[in-house]
Image 1: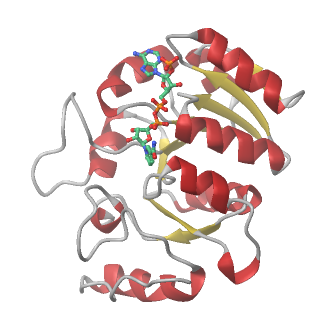
Image 2 (image 1 turned 90 degrees about the horizontal axis):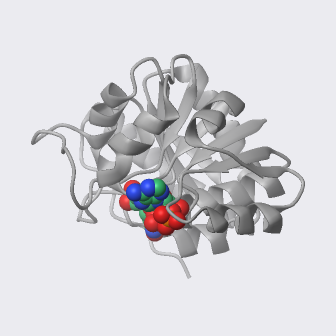
Image 3 (image 1 turned 120 degrees about the vertical axis):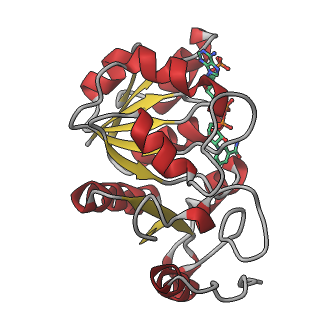
Length: 220
Ligand SMILES: NC(=O)c1ccc[n+]([C@@H]2O[C@H](COP(=O)([O-])OP(=O)(O)OC[C@H]3O[C@@H](n4cnc5c(N)ncnc54)[C@H](OP(=O)(O)O)[C@@H]3O)[C@@H](O)[C@H]2O)c1
């Protein structure tokens, strides 16, 4: 698949790296220092290129938006029309910029800021360093990347990409009920915690039923 990346830093850069390892093509975009994009593209080889955000949107069957919260409006403005595009939002609501109202998820807030996009949120719950290391795992040790969104076919496409990157995709449901995967790290949430597949279904069931999730698992 072709993946356009808007914001190719710690998280977007790792997504690009793992996508290329998984056999996909990436176009990197959006940086104050374009030499960083060129350096990452040359590290990733022939399946990576550099463009501006609008070019990354045009290129991508999937577009990854991975910028600091306060920069989202600028990044989306530079990306242009997202109609019909499957968009993965990795962002967390830290720092400046417009915020979701109390009780509203960041995912539903951001989906509304991307009119026409087939919105999926993922890659936001674990640190970039951990995501990079964990992508090398196999079998039951693989790490869960939670996804949420309101377009099932978009989520299915993203789930395939996540698997190719070396993680286990787990669908937590829609954008309005995915609060457990959002910042901040706290008791009763999956945000900031490692999960493996054996412990994921209990979370999915609890979110579906609107009940507290099981205690956070620990791993050796
Ligand atoms: N870091 C984590 O562990 C982590 C984990 C989960 C989710 N997240 C979320 O994922 C998103 C991205 O985080 P990150 O840590 O990957 O951020 P990051 O490393 O700072 O990367 C952001 C990218 O956006 C570019 N950028 C920033 N401001 C810009 C501007 N004004 N104009 C143009 N380009 C700009 C940066 O390029 P330049 O530096 O060259 O400008 C950089 O390539 C955030 O919303 C964060 O909350 C982060």
